[in-house]
Image 1 (tube, one colour):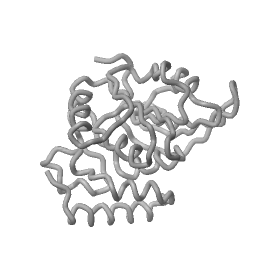
Image 2: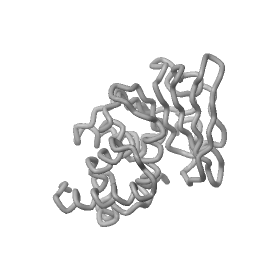
Image 3: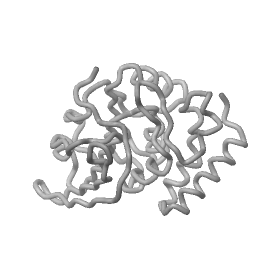
Image 4: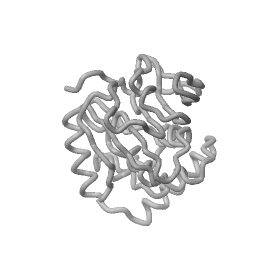
Length: 213
């Protein structure tokens, strides 16, 4: 599949839709305009790639709705060179958006099939996360901590303590919490022991699973 002028036009439209839905961070909207989402999907879904919808990508996982990707990215307040841990690589689309925002991304995937597929795709496309890891996202990545921010792209029934522990002071954790439906939750680390918590509306994610398969 190629990235054509038509695709770019569709991305511009998508960014406009996200802006109308309340995304205000220009760098996030520019990343949505830049990343060819259709390449992250099965070619049979290509026509749907720039609709604001989630789609299946295999291994019972989905590529997140663009609005959700933009919403989570905006909450992270990404600055160039920020060190970000992503829990749930999935299709790699969210990873690519963070890389476009000039973050240094460490990403963990627990589904072996997806891990292999996405890792190959990154290499083919020239996307360069710092590390792509096959492992258990609940544990985070203590050997690379602390992080400027951590993003969880699957629904977590609870907030894993290791993730909070691996944030810098001032760092942000964005995590959808809940079982059937999730509440997007932002934690900001205020000090060694103090966190500020904000709840930011309901979303639906595939579940964050513990222990890799």
